[in-house]
Image 1 (cartoon, rainbow, N blue to C red):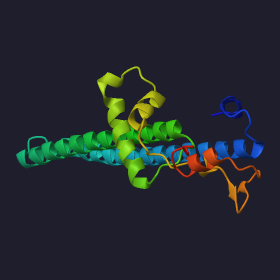
Image 2 (cartoon, one colour):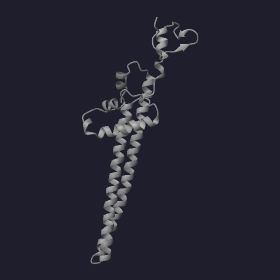
Image 3 (cartoon, helix red, strand yellow):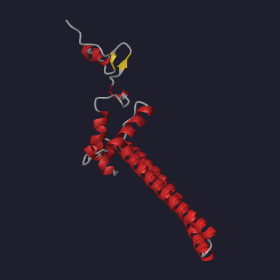
Image 4 (cartoon, rainbow, N blue to C red):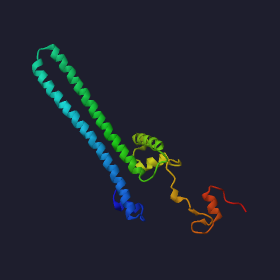
Length: 192
C-alpha cells in the first residue's frame, strides 16, 4: 500500500492519517514476515535433523551389510525420517498458507473495526472457507468479504456519524431540527 493509493480512496486524508494507515499496514506486513521467518527457521531445523539422519543411515548401510538386525533398524530409521520429513513439509505448508490467509484478510478488512473479537474470528473462518470454495474462484477478496458481511452488523458503529448535541441548544451548530433530532434518536418522524 502506497501513500498515493490511500490518497485515491481518501482524498481529504491528512498527512498524519496517511502516516497512521501506512504504519498499521507496515506492522501487519512485518508480523506476517516474522511468522514466515519462524516457519523457515523450523524448516531449516528439520532439514538439519534430516541431514543427521541421512548421515546415520549412510553409516549404518556400510556397517549393516549382511546383518539382518541392522537392516531392520535401518529400514525403521528410513521410514521414520520419511515420516518426519513429510510432516515437517506439511506443517510448513500449512503455516505459510495460514499466514497468507491472515494477511489477505487483514488487508481486505483495512481500517474497519469489528464489533468484537469473536465476530472477527468467525468471519475470518468463513473467509478462509470461502477462499477455498470453487464457487468463489475468480472473485476478489473484497467481494468475498462483502458477501459475508453484507446486511449484518459485524463492524463497530462509527460514532463520528452521530450528530453532536450540546445542552439546551439542539445541535452543536445551534439550529434545532426536530426531524434530525428524532432521526438521531431512532424515532419516527413527528406527525403533524
